[in-house]
Amino acid sequence: MPTPLDHEFDHEFVRAVAGAADRSAAPLAAGPDEEPAGVTHRALARRVKTLIAAYRSPDSTLYGSGQAVAAATTHLGALRAAQTATGLFAGGDNVQSPPDSGFTVNDVCDAHVLAAGAGPELREVTAALADIAGAAVGSLLTGGVHTPNHRWELSAALARLHRSFPDDRLLDRIEEWLAEGVDIDAEGLYSERSAVYASHVSNPSLLLLADVLDRPGLRDAVERNLTATLDLIRPDGTVETVHSRRQDQKHPFPLAHYLPHYRLLAIRTGRGDFSRAARLAAVGGIDDPDLLAETILTPDLCRELPTPEPEPLPRDRYITTARLASRASATAHSVLYGGSDVPEHRRIRSGLACNPTFLRLFAGDAVLDAVRLSQGFFDLGPFRAADMEQLADNRYRLSETLSAAYYQPLPPDRRRDDGAYRMADEGRFSAALAFPDRPRDEVSRTTRVEVDLRDDGADLRIDISGPRVPWALELTFRPGGVPEGAVPIGDGRWCLTTGPMTYRVGDDEIRVEVDVEAGEPLAGPDRIDVLRYDPGQDYTVAGGTDATTGNRVYIGGQGPRTLSVALRARRPAPAS
Image (cartoon, rainbow, N blue to C red):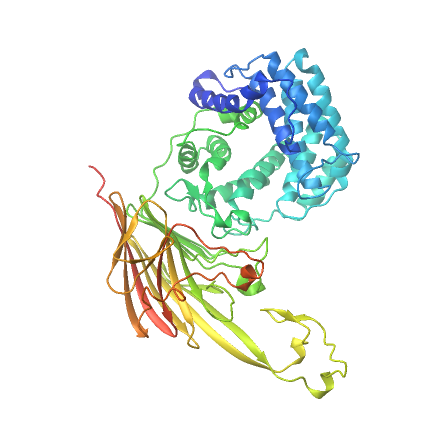
């Protein structure tokens, strides 16, 4: 593994990376014989890899430490004990899982490369790693997957096995998976649209495959994803996830996890925008203990970053495949989303984009985390746009039509004397009523939300048609301020009816103004039956919810209704 020339070497970065590894590895080395009870197989392998990297790094306090070797040996014993007769690892909610074991084997193989180049002190460790890797080969060669990113994680494990223990069968199996094509769309998003799986699985796996197999097209796919992610970076140092189809769709995700990939491709391509993202990802410090091993295995990471390009402001982007729009200026950063999978699939399901948040607004420390529209219509849940149309630059229309039915008697030729009709699902619930065979009377409700994303916020025009049923617009502000001008109704909730309100944090603020164009008066603070969020029966039937937390302001009433909502960000002028 060639190392960068000293004048190219980023000593500060490498010292920070070694410090992160030491914070994880030093306590393990302090008790090298302590059995790691209750530690998962993936964590055991990662610990071994970090201990060996620290042993090898002159910047680590464990450089050349016999205790680090002893701790690695102890952890390898526990890892071998977790390996079943199939070569797969026990533990976790996925039983006898080839991809879950693939995560562990990837670290085992990296640790093997690190140990094999470290001298006789690690001979036994190297042999133990080889035994563990070898035992897994058969099952990883024939094993299957159950999520899109697993294909690339499993392929990376096979490639690492081939790197250390050459075997053409491994290459043939990798080609089977790669022949399916990488699941990246025209905008640069993987099919799962997940920051977690892009940064932790797909990107690192494809980069590894590109290097081992000499397939530059795989590296190009990663560069496309990182390019798309540039427009998903939020002012608080996180990556937007509202459009994700995985677990991270409800949680902020730190940009820090993208650091190695932005850094590596910035160095290899010279891209200043990637360099800017890499520096931003490290603003809060480096805490990833795995980075030290990566710098040894991929020495390019240790080189100085190219000159970063300044962030272009103002800027806007519409990612059509995810129906996600954003606009950023020095005053405000807004995100508009209309790409839920729920309207098409009519269900809440792991693997679908289900988040009903359709707008966010950042104004420095004043943050409107979520705008949602709750609607009391057959318990079908909140507004999730089925369609998003771009009307003009930074102007969009979100729309959804919900329908439910009342069912008529069965036609004579469909009736049964025993009354035993087949169980069927009609989109809201299931019953032994043979729904598809019955005439139906439809009841519909259409909601349209037109949004103009501005440099200083957003203008919304909400039109709700259909029967007279309750609705509530929920504005969830990040804790740290108090809604001034709204009436508190308890439990971190407020009601807004007349007059503007302001949410202020320090010198930053978001102002909200409401104008009713048509419909009944807005609900007052006494109507807590209306001023609430209803997740819908897909959640409540199981006793669950997808409700937000924070300071929640409600604007509500009975439909039909047309109203406009102006959101304005205000921040102090930057010092000259």
